[in-house]
Amino acid sequence: MANQMSVLSAKRIRAQFVRQSLGKALFYAAIYAFLLVMAVIVLFPFYWMLISSVKTLDEYRLSVPTFWPRVLMLNNYISAFTTAKLGRLFINTMIVGVVSTLLSLVITILTAFAFARLEFKGKELLFAALLATMMIPGELFTITNYGTITTFGWKNTYTVLIVPFLVSVFYIYLLRQSFLQIPNELYLAAKVDGTKDIKYLWKVMVPLSLPTLISIIILKMMGAWNSYIWPRLVANDDAHRLITNGLRSAFTDTTGDVNYPVQMAAVALVSAPLFLVFVFLRKYIMSGVSRSGIKG
Image 1 (cartoon, rainbow, N blue to C red):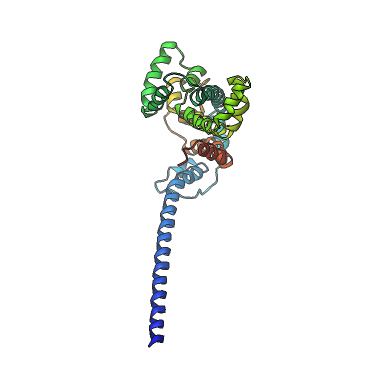
Image 2: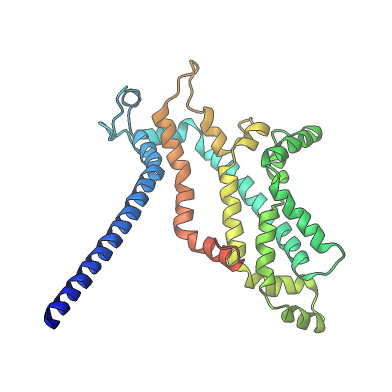
């Protein structure tokens, strides 16, 4: 009798274990299936861009799309570079990106230091007011900025592409949080030794906050690279057109017909630097964000 009870108990335990294992396997299978579907949804546009960039125009226009090109038209990439004058667009974008990043970095460092270490009346209220501006839709700033630059006569200049977005409240907040993690005792000891604020900032706080600063530099450069609406409004001449705007109309002929495969090739060329930046520098972005205490 005891043996029968032990056998039944073992069977129940085995059955329960099988049910738990099966349930866990189904749970993970559902998760992986969901992630696979999401990955396909996210990656398919990039796949379509790449295969379209090496198709002929006639194949691209087929009513039934092909998911692999019948003939590889690698010459589309050469045509894209020459037709859109990508060299000039790259130079314009790099000028705006580098200059705006350097100036924005100086403003961000000085402002973050003031809110992190200096004491003055209304500091917390002013910082709260700055954070509140992040709640305002960017389109409203576009409207007011456009009116301002029109008054100053800045249209079709590098100034209009750089100046309106030098101050970023998000970057100031990010760096301030990083500065606050540096012990205040270091600052007090430096003041006792007679060290000036600017020297302490440059010699101590900037080196210790380097991961966050690298993150800001990368994000700012990527923002300049991806900018579309504002440059489209204020810089339409060839001398100041940025890379995202140059791709919009460079492949349209006089009849309004668009060479989409060549346009896709140009988009692939433009996207490649951003992809490489993310692949090789993503650890710096994550490190800088996590140091600032806003990791998701």
